[in-house]
Image (cartoon, rainbow, N blue to C red):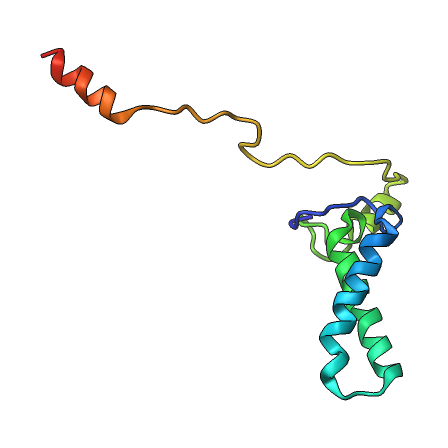
Length: 110
């Protein structure tokens, strides 16, 4: 899972987020001049892609890249009950140095 998923499964995505994305996608393709049924299929396809990218179990497993995380869990008899995403360096406080004061201290010390 190389992307940054916001949800564990499709069931975890709030209905309001799905409707918001559906409205956005519909607005994008509304001016295409295609028939209504084709627009609906296009929006459904793009919505499925959105869900696949934003749900951990739908993403490709990075080590093998030939199956999804959900398929890997299924093969090993495991189920997704939740996840916590941790970014490298997250939570580390960066030290704030005053460079001018540091130089002044070094120059005054000689």
